[in-house]
Image (cartoon, rainbow, N blue to C red; front, side, top):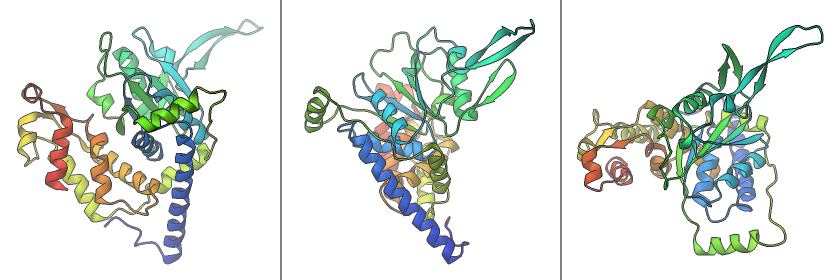
Length: 336
């Protein structure tokens, strides 16, 4: 079992107190976000899990579902510097990472000066990321994975913490460049954003079309978030949860599965990064719900957002109308 058994009693008590305090703080953060975002509880929770786990999120939904507003609000409540870029086919890597300009001083001496791009922030919203060209996507991929950018042979570190929350429109695909598997794998969660229920849409209608609108307030700072992310990695995880994560991820691969649906319908399955993402995500979900350790229920709840962008169906499966969600459901039923 991965736990704190090697710690003395005082250290364990202190760690449990820190986890409880973090859970209370995340509860306040959720309350602030829900003052602005209506009827998207699972979306809000998964976005909070993404930030707390130190990862990046891919939000997929039709226009008008408050994806941009959610990212702005997350930047506010976590006390982070947030910026937004609108991805288009003519967007160049320099438009994101920055570029060097040649300057001349009063003495006539010339030198290059680096002008940082919008990626130098703590929360970057990449709107309609699949409209950016592969060249631009690769520049963003380095920033997401390495948390630095290279311009003219010089490496520049990005601020910490650093999170990318990208959006993608699932409807109009003309003029888009599908994200490569390597970049999709860098997203901790794929968050599907659906329509709000009737009561939530009614509340939103009344709250956003009047003389004033509710705003969110900062609950945490960037330094506190870094400390919270470090604390999360020390959260105890039971052996049953570790085995559940390994079972479901390995069963999603044709090479190691015993599930017939996977052998027949899956073209490629999740890699080891999926296991890492699921381990971090279940810890974050437990903290957000006020628990000191995750359970197998957390694995089931997060299997879809962790795995759905890390697997692909073959042609036969698409022809038969099989969906990835149904395959993941089968994995959960069989192994959890």
